[in-house]
Image (cartoon, rainbow, N blue to C red; front, side):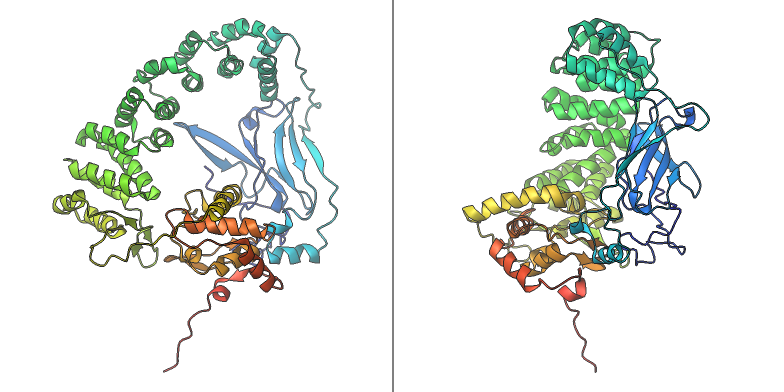
Length: 581
């Protein structure tokens, strides 16, 4: 994680998205924060000074520079910090210098791929402001000046590349080389050749306690790469002194060793515990689920371990939560509380009635009020307005009847903060006969053709939209607002069609929150693709909106063909005029 997002270009950078916004550029006209980082590389060569090893080099093409980030690791979590104060590793005053990728080389040097052109993005993703900026300064040309730069030290001779030999034993020896490119290439060639003659020297290297830990790690993965890793090799790696080697052993252990993985209760390293949680969670067996619950009861307060367990829990959240709750107590509240909160959060975000009721039942049957509070806290995933402090449920969940567990919780919960969660959870639930509940939604089944269009739209959404709005539709802070239960999505389809075709500039109110973001136009999509995406988001996540067909999109596209700018919220929804009194 890198909290500091500042960049320090060596010249004014007006040609960036939202360059007209005072918050985007500094007073001197330079970009304040990174907007287009890409193609990063971790330096693993041997031609730079030792302090550069393990640093991240990150291109920022919008501001014509390359950042250098120092990385530290603690308990399996990485944090990064700028290597320099208010300056960068590499900057250029040439506005067409567009570093987009970094790479380690066979000579230990660092290489930079420079796109070298003024226009950085595909035209379909450019805002109208940026298009005008590019044309005004003729940055659309040239388009054939790309190059690759090699960065070397100026205080010593240029480094020479290492050649990889053909002999398998010689390649194994190169797994100890200080240059990561050389080690990676040797491993790749060993695996691609599948030369069984490499197995014996690889096992010798794996067992060599004096060899670098990275070499033992390469040896293990090489054996696995051409299916030569035996259970005894994995057992040896599980006892290695290096945590990375032990973690890798857990990942490649065959199914026949799951019982042995379940018994790894004495492990202390967080990284290894996290990989163990991931592996046990993915196994989906009674014995591994039991071991996972015990692991979480012991280490559930560690974020990496907890999230590792959650990665493979889909569909088994209730069973795993029950297993953890059965082992929970005041003595292990620090560990079990966050775990139950995490499972409840997953259930709440999934918005499925059955699992939601199942989690309420677990809470109602818990004798420990702290564990009960953790579950209710996780189930309460309300959207809170930071200004008014008021909250609204993220999505109504329809039940067949009022759950008996809910009535039981109302009698047992007495703490003010937990009652607040319970009230919010109750407000989110609806059933026929509940006072104040809206009418149950009426869902009209899609035709065969409409369903086929929805499936195509799902593919388009996954490939193009999910990176920002997320597969679950709840959006991402600082990037995109939620789509689930959004009146923008479920309102008039011509509005969402216009947004997709021409883009939308913030501020825009979604739910009870203001989002000051810009969505780029997606007019390059065909009418059928637009209709498919709209149909998908209007019916996914238990929505019941009407489908949209390609003919409708064609009409909207023709009607607003002359619209050259992104829409604003007021243009799509004119503000209500107040009558003077």
